[in-house]
Length: 228
Image 1 (cartoon, rainbow, N blue to C red):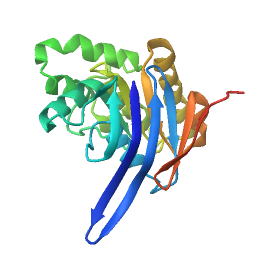
Image 2 (spheres, rainbow, N blue to C red):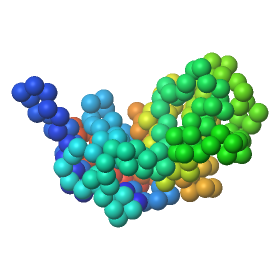
Image 3 (cartoon, rainbow, N blue to C red):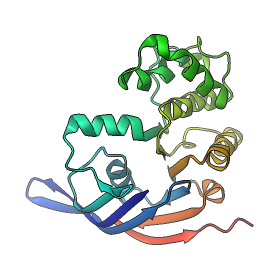
């Protein structure tokens, strides 16, 4: 599904040039659940911005399902991103003044759906993440784990080809983290959802098929996870 070939990324700051990604080669197949780990400043965020079609200024080749999309104009790339990638963030990134239903519905409206067409899709997504009947509540009325489930439902609503989860358990306690990771594993095993999980938490790794370690902008190791 995803092929990065000889990727280099530079940032210019005044007179200085920072080499942020260094000769990155990476393949992720459909149906995989992959963990990406690395210290702060290692290039993780830059890498997932690139994979998620947010950043298209780099050297090298990014092939998605065999096709390079980086030459697409911003409008087209935005539409591709909305229909192809689901994003989940550490801080949930929910709109506080919108109900749970409205938060989950938003990508559909961006994607051109009419409000009259969204009901069944939103309810199905909420049911999938165990939030049936919570649509009229507001984020502040929910626990952290429930808010992350809303974010997961929102990420699934467009039936994306893959999901990027950036520190999805970072703001959660141990028990809630396990529940969210079990949900991820279920989505991956039962529905074939491709997941790329960026994390500092070693507890995430056993749920994944592969562990990719990145340091100083380069991939340090890429190994299958052996679950004992």
